Length: 200
Image (cartoon, rainbow, N blue to C red; front, side, top):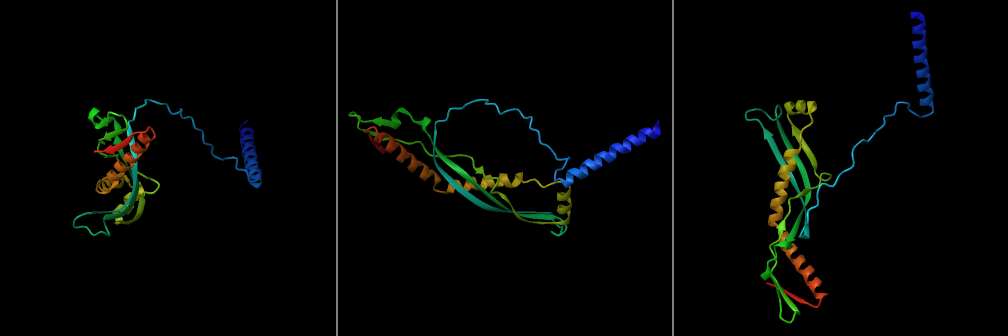
């Protein structure tokens, strides 16, 4: 009985191997992996009304030079210096919901209007992960061993990059450009209605 069972098992193995051989000759692998997506569709949770006019977008890029070292320990043993290229955009917008009654003054004849625009605001930077990457990195022996065990995290670099891009946007002409673009938009819109616009 046992001998017969062994013969059946060996025969089954031979058949499987033969099938694999035939499939490989035909260029078809019988063990191809298959990907099954059982994820649920995305659901709309809420809708938020937006009263912002996004008038300008600034494209920014910076190179971070981060040096981590251990006091008294040679960089060859422990230390990490990273050059990280960060790229992204910053939106500048005018919040039109901030208009008060005295910010829009229409003339008695209805042919002209004086507008006082709210100050332009800056959105949080939108980092482009496809264009942000580690350009180069010098590591000590300890860091190389640690990276071999667990991949290094880049969250620190992205957070610092956001800070750098925010500062660059604040120092740029992005707010001014957003205000000018908004004025042009409002001028064209009211001109189509026969109203001449001036800004105070």
